[in-house]
Length: 96
Image 1 (cartoon, rainbow, N blue to C red):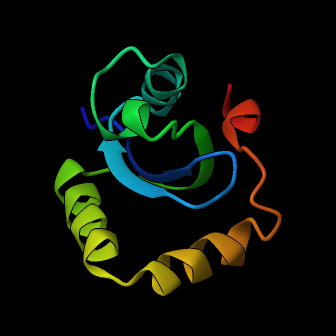
Image 2: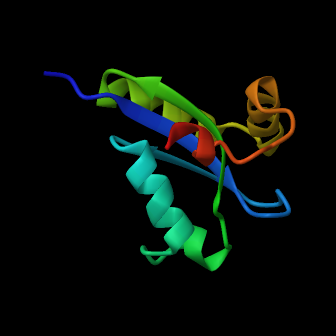
């Protein structure tokens, strides 16, 4: 049985930092970032706003997409976010 996976992009309040990640439980993972449960980049830079995500049925596809996004320029990430979320609103409230 396949479980859905997600790639996601988060930012901080001022939209100055971008973080790309992959998870098999988007709601739980974003909650962890927002609650600063896990030490690391998102806690250190106060990254707590979900601005973009994609769903995949296969973890290998999700990981490949995450690597593709991470390898791209900041402008490509901005364009990706703007394509579905031009106001850069926090999408977390829409998925819970």
